Amino acid sequence: MSSIWKDLRDLFWPPLCPVCGERMPDGARTVCTACRMDAPLTGFWTQVDNPVVRKFWGLVPVVNASAFLFFVRGNGYRDLIHGFKYYGRWRQALEMGAWYGGELAAGGLYAGVDVVVPVPLHLRKRLRRGYNQAEYIARGIAESLGVPVDVHSVRRHRHNPSQALKEHRQRWENVRGIFSVRRPGRLCGKHILLVDDVLTTGATVTSCAEAILAAVPDVRISIAVLAVSRHNLEVA
Image 1 (cartoon, one colour):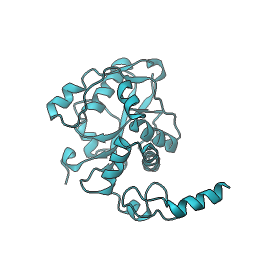
Image 2: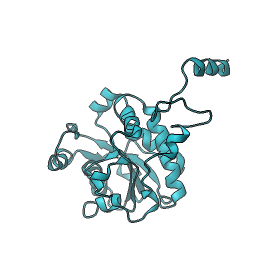
Image 3: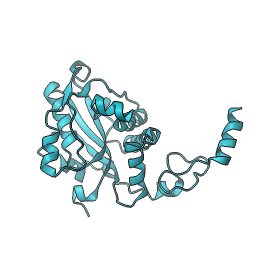
Image 4: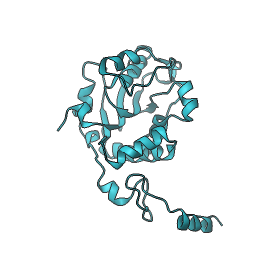
């Protein structure tokens, strides 16, 4: 019956690519084949020295850092990210995380990661949205890397206003001291992959990493974000 139902569902409500809106071909996962081939991938996860790593120079020590996609205005991948960030499409965040994690595993630089930690939302925002998109990206990455995901050890104990409309200096002030570690023993001595959805100034990820290092000084931290704009990296 399940196969019959799937056939009927696909006949009347065919699955559409979240990037271009066209019907998904059989066997395609996450996005259609054409959009996968056209994805604005950065390739940074294969480079020890890349613009995302340089973004954190002088801010927080990282082993590796990368972004998967360039966040391009007018590109369908921007709509996909907005879909799981604001419109409840958490399964797409999970699938994009799994795609990213597969590339991280193939690249080799992230082979030493012990645990994946998503940048947490404050409980109030999580209840309002219903989920944390960074957590689903992290779960997809962790599954592909074959390591656990920890969503309990780090928390956002203070609710801060959205970063979206704030200027550069205000973004840093807005996230100062908002994270804490409640289970430091679980992270002790580990190589943590800190995951978020979109990198802008780097203020939120830096604040989270600083809180972890203050509570557990012997950890090593790498960073993986799903998307970043060329403007925020100042790359051609």
